[in-house]
Image (cartoon, rainbow, N blue to C red; front, side):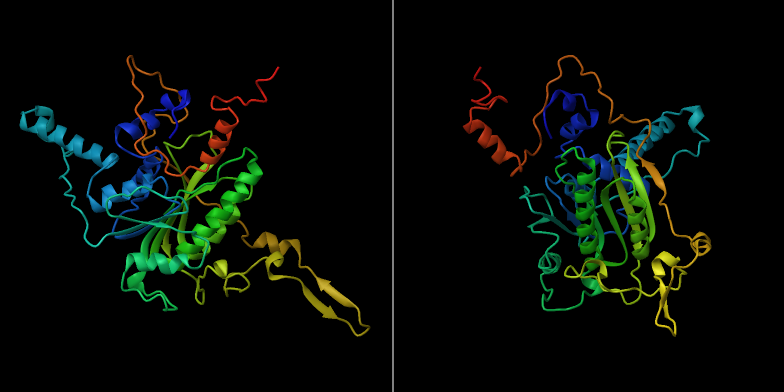
Length: 375
């Protein structure tokens, strides 16, 4: 969380510091939960690419501390206001059915949350932090051992008792401004997060991850649809409309028969999955016939076969959060006497720290170097 002039006018940036969040991205997860009810019947969660920990903060407050945040908190406030009006004898509220019973919320039992990142992360209440690489095969035994101390790393299979209910990932690369490169790196990061999720999710589990929308993103949706019953794309209100980021929300994990996830062979690379669905000629491959004279005939199929089969599936695109809430792209005017608060948790090991140290050595602490000052 920076302190530039643009950040100061960002309503979600200010709200994050006022409400004690480590980053404004916490509102994105809260708004996704409002739309998809992600935390229902969830007790075992894995947060990938977790630093600085805003999504883990949401998990800690909702699942471990039992707090009602976001729209749930607004519903509680509205309930109290309506109850107060009814108790004061407001005639308009006597026959109203708008007053719903209050929901009782308490901390859940046996909640296990593991946060994984290559960068160190400051501790959070009830969160197990692991400094590990999500692409390395040794990460899964460490993850399962953190969830269940009695887990046997020598076991070749993951039992349902050790599996998790929800895997989330808000990871993104340090963007370069080269959109094609940024989209490619993000897709590889998503690939790694998805493959780890397939290794630890239990049947019926959920997967939420950040994506960069691009030209051929529908191919990703189709791949996710193979292992999840429903796949949707969501754009939270707190996510800037000018950004290409969005979030895939996958529910009801149901791997195909014979599929076995592994970090050593991501997504079953090199193996085919049997399917009863008719595939177009471009996916079934050409057929070869050798004639008597030794000439090989190659049949590529017909265009009509491809037109008859459904070869493209587009996931639904949803807007999350209160559409009348703050606009993430707008620069809101600062009130009189506004004092900018310090970030809740400064970066512990930012990747740009070495660059800043080198700049200071060259006398560029204020954006200039010794060479640039010579006229």
